[in-house]
Image (cartoon, rainbow, N blue to C red; front, side, top):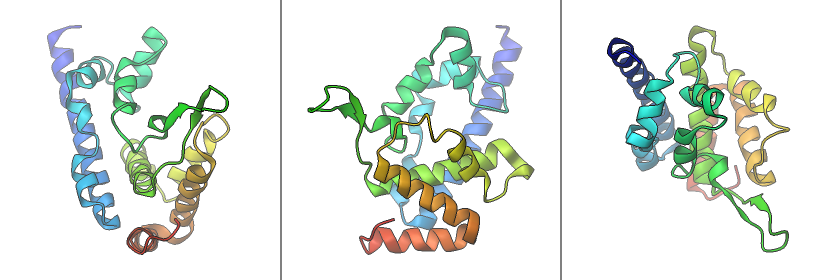
Length: 185
C-alpha cells in the first residue's frame, strides 16, 4: 500500500475512532459510568488493532470487515473482543455441563456500555440518517445468529426498544436509576 494511502487511512481511521470514542464516553457519562466511558476501546490504539484497521480502513463500515474478507477472519477483532468487556463475545466460556463454548451472563454495567457503544456506532456510521430506531434495527438484524446469554440479550434489547420509544434522555435516566439503585435493567 502506498504511503499517501496509508496516511489518508490513518487520518480517517483515527477521526472515526476518536469521534466514536467521544460519543460512547458521553453516553457512558449520562449513565453514570465515568471510568468505563474514559477507558472505552483503548485497545484500538494498540498495534494489534491499529495497524490492520488502518490498512483495511474504508470509512463507511468497520475495517474488521475488510480484514475478514481478505483472510477469512480479523486478527484485530480477535484482539479487541478479548479485551473489551462491552462485547458479548467476550462473555463466553466452556460449560462444565456441555463442554461447549456457551454465553455467560454479562454484568449489567457492561450491558449498559454495550448499549452506549451500539448507539454511538449507529450515529457514527449512519450520520444524518440516524434515528433512535437504528440501534434496535441493527440488533434485531443479527439476533438469530448472535450467541449472547438470554438474560443479557433481553436486557440490551429492552434498552434499545426504550430508546426507540422514549428517546435518549428517558433511557439514560432509566439506566442511571437501575445501576445505582441496583435494579434490573
